[in-house]
Image (cartoon, rainbow, N blue to C red; front, top):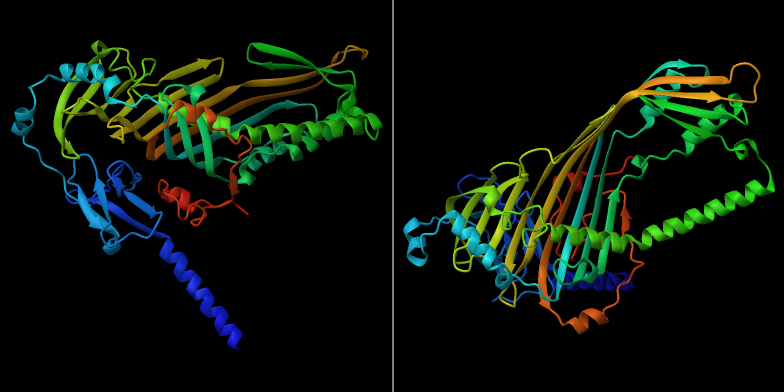
Length: 508
């Protein structure tokens, strides 16, 4: 009994120690007037680092060591008064932020009365001096969210000379196909490199997860077995197929090995096939780092900072209308709020927030004004109907601006609506070459949405030598999660998950 109490006491002490070493603060930010959540606010212990509140205004910030009684957290957001709290006394679950009111005369006293076009021109002139383009190391968290929804999947069998290929069989396949699927990849990492140089980026992944439902990843093994047994029963060894859809047709021969079984050659081919699949899977896992590094680089390089960006309001201002809508306040600095809309054929509109002292763009919100891609031909259609996002920049230790937060959301639809005919022919058969025929009408529509989010917690200037000496770990792969696990990122600063992620659970 004495040993039991001693073990219990030791366990309690250990739990207390862990709790003392690992402390976090979390709350929801609300506008004191509108009572709406405040996204993209910075919650930090210093001026140049911290977490970002998510789209619902929620945040959690973890501390590397136990805060002292003198330590404070600061909550800053464009257009709101900065709030300061002593860390050790903070217990609020809801934090109300008050909008910062600004008189126009205050701005005019400290700045010339510029037009919107003049402010945009000065923002362009000061790009190279305002933003950090040298080597830096950034501690970041990246989340990629993918959503697929099949809104239409119909196959209408018009004619079939193979009894098993009937409407009931096709409907059973369509019913088994998943109608929607969500997929989330999350990465905590250090990124080394210079802005706008994909080949110069290096990524050190600290931890990564992949949250998705394996049962909704379409697997065709069962369907393939059914098809093969039916085809072997009715189709001749030396047949070929004529596939017609609309105005086009293709000719496919059937492999004679399809009909062979229980032979050594087939066994060897199968083993070789399986081995190749294993190599392919290993290669896919190895490429996880490069693939996600490229995704992060693409997200950063979409910014207005670069000449080839689609957000070209700085490079080609004559194509847009600009208007000063209001003035705001951020970190004791006046900020111009300027909207832009295309004059003619440009794709985007948005709101630009520009520091009135140095003319740095500290935030950009944008969205497309028309479909970015539209394709429709012979029953095939594709539309990229949505692209919107946000970029937020803040100063780092070099006194230059660097990316603090970015998100891009894209939406598209893909559809097929056309007749499909599969005809079996055999030139070695006496009489008619045509052996079997399957005629149908097909109609599929798939909607896809993709969202990338990136938050940078810390930036540290580094030398080119340190960058060159760093070696990536290419075999890094994410941990599979069948459902949301609130403990997976415990102790790490991340973007707080939204409700959809928290509710995610694979179907048993």
